[in-house]
Length: 129
Image (cartoon, rainbow, N blue to C red; front, side, top):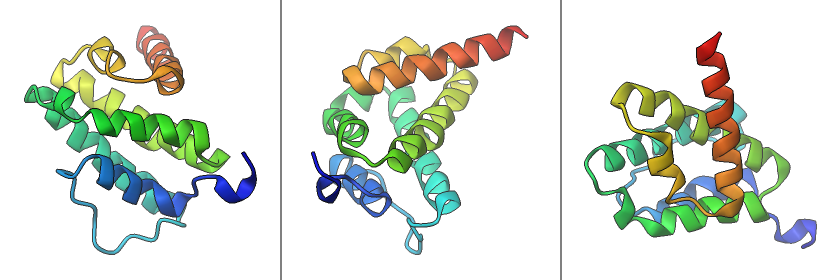
């Protein structure tokens, strides 16, 4: 895949919105700004955890395809943003909601699952210290 076909930061939220129509993105977000993208991804994380808490996340399979696509076709800063903005935020939220990380992991595809487990492992090690 050449650089022209890579998913850029500007495409992340529209791709996730298309895959998860129940998510409402913020109106005015500069997706080129790393902090604003991270904030918007943490909003996506909150939405996904809310769906999981209410037993509805498995009804949104397209969002896991989209996350996988971001890992496979995304530029390096896209992969980093998804890992830190989405997955780390989700991990922090599932602890509060007493959701087992494996419940989310079962819904993920291979590439995204690898990064989810990395965050999960990091979170476990941090909690032990």
